Length: 156
Ligand SMILES: [Zn+2]
Image (cartoon, rainbow, N blue to C red; front, side):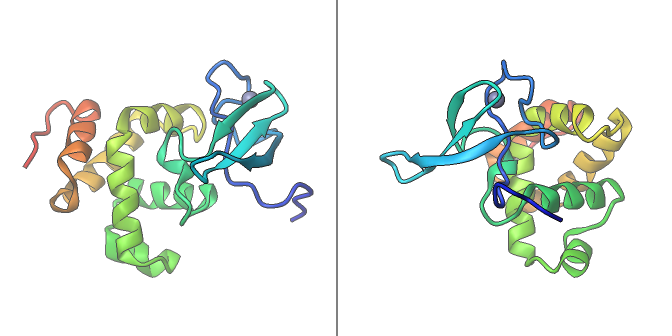
């Protein structure tokens, strides 16, 4: 596949942009760095600069958006961390950290999964219940995030 602008895994972070969190049709370039050392990006659609670390778990460096989407789909199908490790070849710690991030940003991720990945609500529920099964690994922040999308759940 040809990616003329090079591999950029981030999507626009400007909520007012038509391409907010959208992979398809995005027009983003790298544009220098912040003083903190974070990569700075620029969206041609809304003419806004943003930082890669802002926002949802999709901006973790270790995994590309495509890989995160794959893992989300595997979670919907009730695959555990070990089976995801086997399928994707990513170490279980990496996957564990992703689950942590997903849970922490659960509400935002829920919107993303439904609007951008066309998952149904019940599929998201499957995903969160799979994440919840691994909650021993989750921090308090992550468990609180999970609680927002799973009203019935209680922190450990
Ligand atoms: Zn934009």
